[in-house]
Length: 178
Image 1 (cartoon, helix red, strand yellow):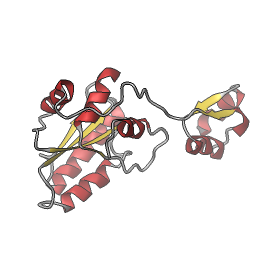
Image 2 (cartoon, rainbow, N blue to C red):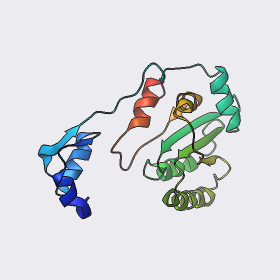
Image 3 (cartoon, one colour):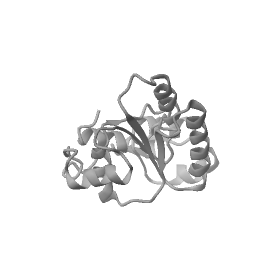
């Protein structure tokens, strides 16, 4: 933002997703009078709770190698680190033996920066001894897939370090996921 203050301050309107994002723009020198908050929302006719035995939910779990009795934890984001995946892995490694069989899926966007972060995150998983329980999914998928992916999980996990948007949390909530 600091590198683009002049351009941003000349715009007639900047839409941001939360008051937090607006505060970050203002903190970084952008005039508050041309920033409007457009709250996050989702299509609640598509993001609805579905049973685990729904054919598409079952297909997602099978494609990820999640057995019917396994607990599926899910984090979604451009990268998983900023969503708190490293902290989740540390917590999960400390709970060895006290959890039912589980798998932690991190659905991230494929890009060079994310690839480097994924490698570092997977190194941490190996260091913690949970590399067989953690999977990074980096494929580009349709928005039509997302309600089924979220419904495939048992718990949506995102103790975010930095969250300016929050769409996956909104969608997980609409699907009834804790």
